[in-house]
Length: 341
Image: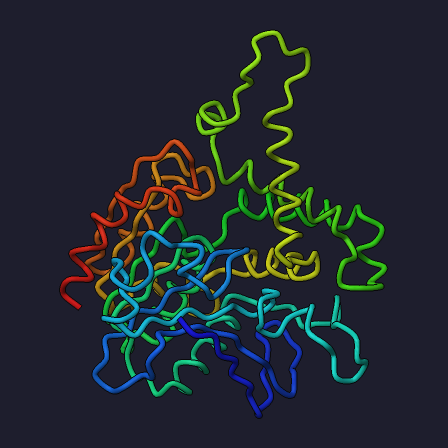
């Protein structure tokens, strides 16, 4: 999939207030150009991922894979405030010549979808045959299915929900507290400010993404006589360091946590149930049986609010992250949907 950047010439108005004279939206799509009649598959990525779905979902996306980038016209947009090419706090503020840092407008999931709609229009795509997203990518997918119900034929919402819960917001706030505890963060001296806080925030997040069983299976001490257990601790440190090494910055992460907290498809639409009742896409809700962020029972209620939605369950030892790991089960669910696009 080739990388492109859409630069807008019109002001972009943010839902929570604020306007930028223009924005950049980075996206990847199938190597060929879009032609009317192409079957379109739109992937919405998760919190710290990017538009390169072949990289972070390699078992499912790519030539000859389930989401075949040659058979379908596949698109994945880097969401606003992510540091991988789209406008956000790491972008240069033209009025100062420095990154926006904390002066970037607060950004919502609805803003992210509006930016993706700009890409859809620029590509000349009138309808999306299948949209799929997990976690905050699922937030975008369900928001889009509500915003443009006539344009989306099929929708797959994986390990997600229609409105952020207090439990998830509590996790986001704990991670923001870690960022703010790093003196370099609010100093805004350079884009590397707050890296120690970001590593801590990432380590906190990982615990919520996984499970007791998952850590027991993969991070158990191998030395029966060890005095201080360290294998899981080392794993946490590594995951925090890994995120900063791949170019993620604390300011982008901070804004993304607020985007998570903004999610509510019912806002201004008479509530969640009323908003979901307007979805026209053939919808599938996929839940992970051990997901501590989006519990199974809540996922069933979510599916029940969407007309004609199918509910499917994936079994995993690895909690929320199961949507990135249980590829055989996901393939079994998705293959029939892909076959009839």
